[in-house]
Length: 59
Image (cartoon, rainbow, N blue to C red):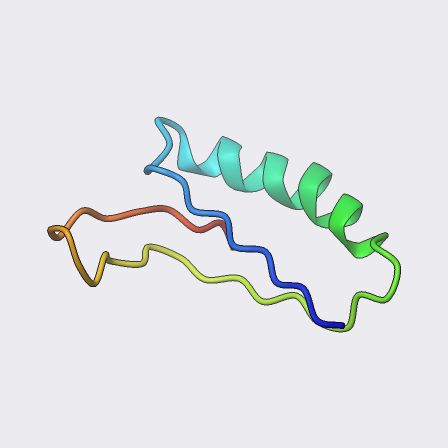
């Protein structure tokens, strides 16, 4: 069985602090998920529909 997670955030007030917290807390937690085979991250994606609003995807 395959499961995928997608998390998008608005650009944080302090991107460096956000990245630091994400890498130090969230990534290690995610790596403990049983059966995890891969984790991919991207940054500053742009909406395809509904306007040109930029979202934040930590990496």
